[in-house]
Image (cartoon, rainbow, N blue to C red; front, side, top):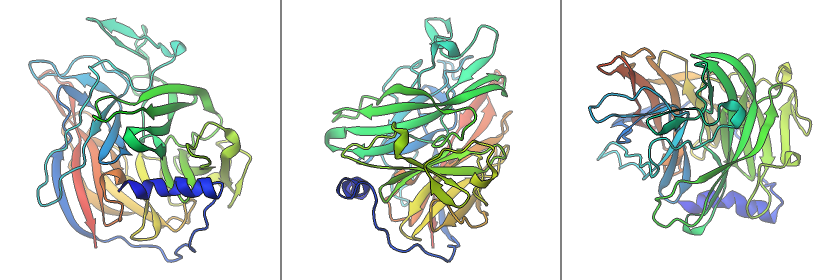
Length: 389
């Protein structure tokens, strides 16, 4: 399995990142569901976790990054405060003839924030019973570092060595109302030699406001690596997507240098980064509601899977011969159960890293909630496998 992910980086070293690809398909693919298999909910003992997304980290090991994470107390109820994000590993899921719940393993104790907050974002946060909650401010507001997608992996080596990047929105909230969005931070995510898989990757905030508040947060909404490029998607003000691409050069490609980026503007790739309000960057038939984009060898197409928005878990799919489009009109192919908590259902995402890479099937999760005895929302994240005809 590993070779299929290393191939783009071998090519990028030999051809300075630009790979001659076969002519793209011109007829839109119409996906047809063959079978649905339920795997129960994601399991992370002792933690109540919201909206997990994933990246294939190394052979047969997934990295999961999640939003608000709370402690499950000894009596089974949910703790009162949240840390803004957390991470776990998992193995690969069982085959569909033996579907089992997928166990997420969190090597770090509760309170470990994966994407750290800055001091001017109430970085230490309020502390209670020996646990601090970064981002939680004394006035009741909070800064959040909520990941919408897993890190972009640019290199996988032997013995668990991995190089990746994450683009995280800098956002200040009161309740769920946005007070301010100051930009998008670039984190460097790396794993050293870890034969046992018991050490979470280290994260370093490499560049503060890599994208400014007047630019698109490329990479914060979705990303896909294909043919020597990292394609990075971000939300436009009208909740559509725009796309940039970074050429992957060298043995360990980096996303830190702005000179490796191009932006899709007015139907062509350009080196000049547009402002977020430029109407010519909008990709028709796309949505910035949380979702996933990946490449399917089965269909020789890019695939976008996401939801139709809170409070439902209706999954929509569209395809495109190229990362920049044209994208087919989204069609619904699955509807997930909705919880009876205050938040219903949301965060409909796909997990291509859980598959064998053929494109014959895909795994989905979404978040739904139910109240505990104290009325606090408990997050549930069902996992299902969708096989295509």
